Length: 434
Image (tube, rainbow, N blue to C red; front, side):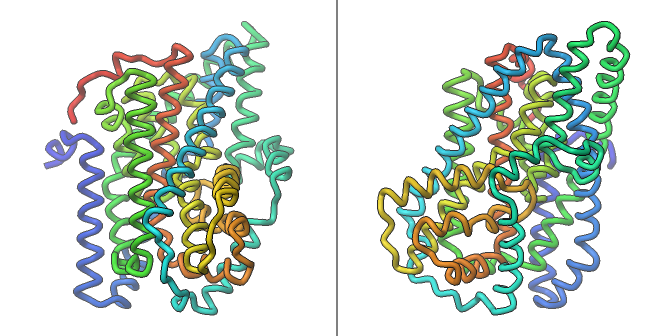
């Protein structure tokens, strides 16, 4: 039985876990009722899903530090880091702006906010959301940029602050390159450590089907599909736009047209990361899996995977950008506000910039929507109502956003690796079992 299970490719096992989780959660909800199903979900099912997420989060700090340092030293020339970083950031900005533009087009076509009232936004929910929005707004753009430089690298690691870790790890890698031969023992240590952490990641990923099962069972038991009835058109617009972004922008445009690589192998290679992203709704938690998929399945060299993907988990939020644009139109349509072309452009720019500051954790994007809603004339009181109305249902929307974010991260990593000559196309093109 165990050998039969292991013979199934991991992404298929994750898909089995996802489907079983949905069935179990909905079965509990229909068989026992909403309240009892939610109680069972919170008490007996969620802890197993949380345990899996913790195992993945446990690896984020050691994985970023070891793979990034090893990746920089593998370049052999610090100058390559500049071209890699410039290409990465430019491509991330381009895909994000394209994503939010598609979201605005879809929102205009489907009119998800037309005729919506906010009766479901209860006062206590408004209060909770107001507190969360204030927390998300505490730091401005300048503060976030300064946070890239850690005053205490150890503290940054203990807090799981990704950008400071990236900055410090790059400096360590550059220092090793500049030091030359005397630093060879340090270089060897980080190379070995990166391999060890990657092996641990693969071991943890064997638990992914069970973690995904628990998380999906909990979501369905406590939320259920019917929670989307009030937001059906917003959900349809989001899922449709995200699928278009994944298939046409990442798969067709970047992978097939620009890189001249097969789409089928790309989607096969990222299936594990997409499954974990969809179930955890966290780009940061999916990072170890994304790096593993990029290196093992798609042939992205560790010098690129270890630098591009951690950066992407922090600043590349295409799914979030799509969502912010849709929420802005949703609110404007519900309020009966006619959005001008100037406002469309401002929403696109604001959603692109704001999404970069979104944390790679569940529901972070929705809380930052307050910044974008102001552009279309939604006042503070209406903003609270809109976000409080959507917040209880956001988990099911966030899952698709995160899968989009992670898919974009890996597509950009493949592109940068190809341009830098660090992509093993034989591995990418390999006809591994699907």
